[in-house]
Length: 240
Image 1 (cartoon, rainbow, N blue to C red):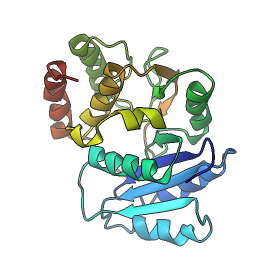
Image 2: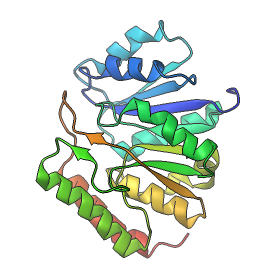
Image 3: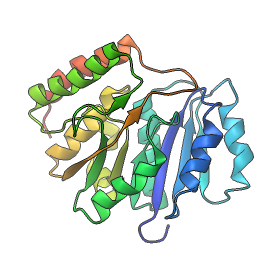
């Protein structure tokens, strides 16, 4: 069991050799004693090996789960959530490995939960206008209107429903049947937020600046977008 207010940052990886060590050192450079769980989906570029090489330096704080292949963003986070609950962490974060999410914003998300009264906090690109840097205009439009579409269909007030930068308090993840979460790709982000809100948990959106990756390649695909589009309609008629 971890100490009070223990914090785990879950970072899924696939071919992030260019970013892995940098993001790990950036998180561990923060005050507050954050731990990291890397969930690597069989990266052929040696990402897992790079993480292992750092575990001696950050003993007890840097953890790794290796999976056999690309099994989906959602299943990676579900695996991480279950691991975090089993180990007794109080606050569990989602974050990308590519620095599109600034590690320096982690304490702001935590504060929204610890001091601000939220059960979970979203690092929001759209809570204060559009705060996205170096994204192609087509992707900005797709992402922004995906959230508009989600708010319209599901009737929520969340401005950035597809955000992948979050802090969950333990009670939220304990209150959701993680085995019932159906979407695997970026629709997973919508499903988790909507389920938490329907369960009565309080959400806060913390404005952040999202910066497009400088190293490595994006994992976005048309199939991921299609799953989210049709998945939102299915969520609308699901019973909780």
